[in-house]
Length: 622
Image 1 (tube, rainbow, N blue to C red):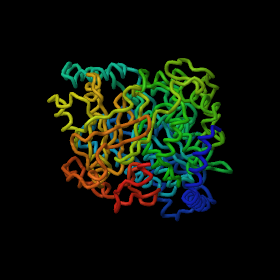
Image 2 (cartoon, rainbow, N blue to C red):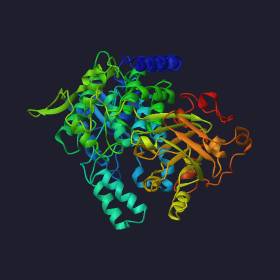
Image 3 (cartoon, rainbow, N blue to C red):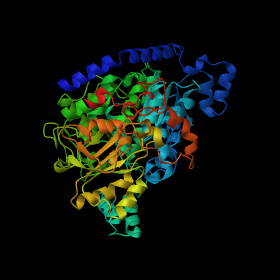
């Protein structure tokens, strides 16, 4: 193993020893209760009658006779999301496959799935991050009937997959698979789309031209093709062994996709019926989590996972931190160039070798743990294979040992960059993360006067009045989890890009999110402590000089220490979160933890935010 990967894994394991032990003991108790499997064996007759009532035909016979495996399907299907629309017909196919192996598969429940692309810049976006935890709780409700021996989880996009995984980990003794649907075909290139957005922001293109560009980019069922959170999810599920090998980026209409769904159903039923079944809680261990972080860094994946991976890990009793990300990023080479970190999309990445090549080159470099348990079986080397139809049947064959397009995907021995492009920033403004894999070297350090806003609208109005045509560090505060649910701030990106293109030194500092579409503008995001908890970001005044230094990992306000300490936090000016359902989420805003601790609302998972002290700690400023 690479020494940094080994060291981070060792300290993660030690740090998590007590919480992981408690989690595994809980799994052991749950598994012992199933010693008379199937799970429904322990139900009273009236309970079982209710569980069987909706079954028909052979399913009723199997369930009532206490024979065969019972699989629960948790689905995020809706036809609002292009990525989730293909799931409409999956349950029926899974039910038929289950019958063929003497099992029963039923939809245990549905979970909400909202589209961040639709809600960008809208009030509904303030529900987005919290939807992850709602999904986790909805998953728990779906599985709470205690009649299932295995689980099939249908989900793809941003908060959906992390929520499904966290919910499934509460039932970690059950064999579980994530079932993807694949990306849409490539449309108008992401680079062309970005240029049209910049032209619109600069007043050089009209709404009709912008709409035509967007429709040409997002044009059919399947995941959006840029490398945002949705596709980062899919890559992670491959590398963390929660998909079958190479399943992430097979197109929805490819016959291999249906074959993979069939094989996944069979595999979960097989594990559940085996002499030694194993659950998702055993698959997601410390080495699995480190593998996920390494793969995310190597491919320039979404910064949202600096929260989502922490939250998923916490659900398995594992205490992942931003410092783990930071140390791994310094050691993990960047081997992929996918938009916004390049011009290629995920289809090009898949065609170049995709996750099987990624796993192979990272294993060979000692950067991934091979000795892990996966859905496919023991050992991550199984994931150097790709799925193919051979004589009408699905087989997993060794993927090419060399990249088929070195402009998109390279070996770890010849990377695009020596590090993973993610930094943790510390300083007098607190703790933040910055993604620099798409930031040109000359833009990695910005020192300029601040201009402070409390929402995107104020920034866009100032931009349109040309008040920002200068070197500037744009500060957007009151955007953290407790403030308003931490909406993504993508509406800023085109305008910030225009300012940079005009020759200005530009950076963003925010306690909000920019997610997987973070691009060429240096953006210090997830600033912690957040503004509404009196974090230092709440004391910034217009004109204060701020230094964002992605090279040394510093985030500082260059104001006299005594003067800055004497300032009072700015009075909150944002609305009170009413309308578009936001009032229903007030309890979650009150309960949510810090961004660097996963920004989840579950009091029993991981370290908790001590709201009695918002002072920047020594750890955050060192």
